[in-house]
Length: 142
Ligand SMILES: C[C@H](OP(=O)(O)OC[C@@H](O)[C@@H](O)[C@@H](O)Cn1c2nc(=O)[nH]c(=O)c-2cc2ccc(O)cc21)C(=O)N[C@@H](CCC(=O)N[C@@H](CCC(=O)O)C(=O)O)C(=O)O
Image (tube, rainbow, N blue to C red; front, side, top):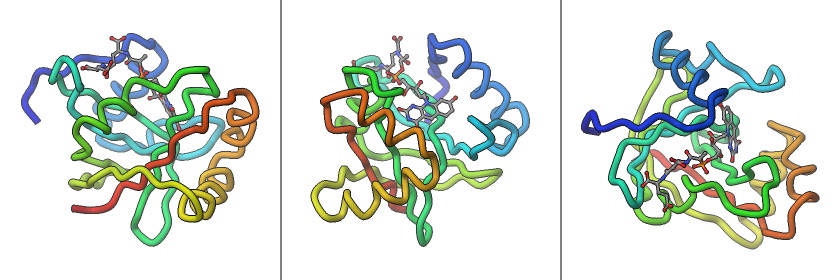
């Protein structure tokens, strides 16, 4: 990724990204004492580097990205980024590696949704809050 990084306009998120970058470890932050991973991706419109922390949902070396945005009526913008370019760098703890995001649906999504809610129970409330189906993408090592 080149160095045209644009930080999040959301202060608490930007501060968590700064802490992860300062420590080199996603374990330096948490949300409700639950672990976090960080995706680095390309902005769909700006082409800039975007860093997006998400709750850590992992199964057999594959991770899930849940485009919940707290149950807001609209998808988070990073979801549009991944639709435009699914290639990311994924960081868990101090490890980083290239991965590809793939949206999942149907039975595959239902199976992963259980893992997502087990990892971070508020996802269930977020889905209750909105009539948009919260997108779930798996992040497969590339
Ligand atoms: C605020 C907005 O962010 P967003 O991409 O909508 O995503 C909102 C949130 O989902 C995002 O901040 C997440 O990191 C919040 N978040 C989680 N968000 C989730 O949706 N799910 C999670 O599990 C989650 C966990 C989490 C843990 C820690 C933490 O610090 C944050 C966490 C934003 O950054 N807007 C930018 C633009 C962002 C962008 O990517 N723009 C694209 C264009 C996108 C387009 O319009 O096509 C570009 O640069 O080209 C701006 O307004 O300038």
